[in-house]
Amino acid sequence: MRPGDLERVVHNELRAYAFPWTRGVFEDCLKEGQECRVAEFEGEIVGHGVVTFGAGEAHLLNVCIRRESQGQGFGRDLVLHMLERSHGLGASVLFLEVRPSNHIAGNLYETLGFNEIGVRRNYYPADSGHEDARVLVLDLDQFFAA
Image 1 (cartoon, rainbow, N blue to C red):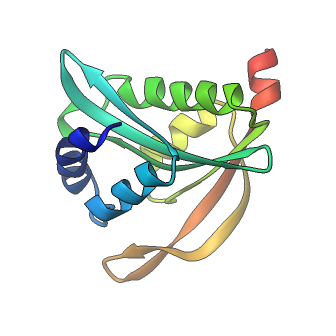
Image 2 (spheres, rainbow, N blue to C red):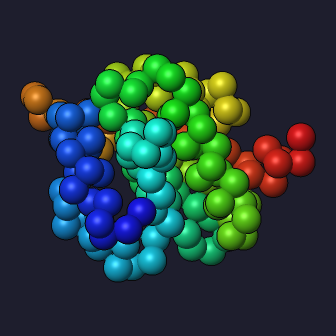
């Protein structure tokens, strides 16, 4: 992801989520050197992801596939790429949060071998208050040893 990609990234984010990240959040991620990637298909940005690192761990902060490209495997490919990058940069585990109501993402993470280790109460904004987050983890060393 480069600064020139942000217009398309934010456009996709706004169409995919009721509570999207702002352009400023993505700009901060780029400035801070977080691992920010876009997924392209036929010259178009179809998705993006952001992961951060610390103490041998990675935290997948954002995965988004534009609405009209969902269900075509781009999300799986993007998550797998982010797992590879995280492991390649020295992370042995990767954490993420997912809304319990986001069944598609939850199912994807479960098929990749993520395990639920907890719940963050009132983590996500929602139309009526807040929604909890399922906290998931994947042992990257084990995942890539298989």
